[in-house]
Image (cartoon, rainbow, N blue to C red):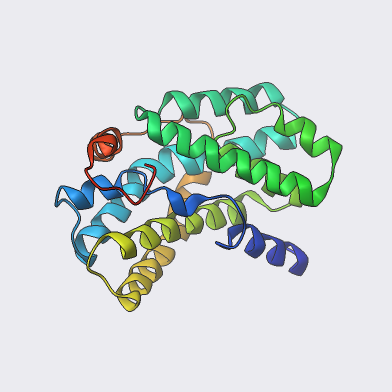
Length: 225
């Protein structure tokens, strides 16, 4: 990765970049309200489960597959991955959250790069899920698959910790300790993803799915999912 690519990746992953991810908890708010996640230890378990059940076999794998499809101009596979990501999410709020973040990312980045080719590729995403949208942006910036997956994984973990700080009794130092631990596990997780390129997407997180679907019933809400 070139220095300019590193800086561009940092820009895309910064919370200052206007994608609106801070508005979504992906079910964590429900888990906190119901007492399933109430401290740093239980949030760590939530993050571990996310990495093993969602990031590795689904979101991270979809991102790597999408970049691979873009490298060989296989736009049909790119579109199918975007559709499959939507189909794998049982919670309507989470489907909307992923598409909302993805579409804002594509719009914001498109305004910056002002490349008609990028805009044409963006239109090939039927739903604009976050993973496929980030794959398209990373590909356009020339970011290698491994670095792209690491950056996306960091983005997702940082989002979980950020939501956790607003939902449970936990200090900033505890949050950073959790994020540091997650970061240390990301390289191994991404290496597993890179070995799974030929495997289908899958996601098995019943607890996560139930919390995401029950979010609409939370009495007082800070987040949209």
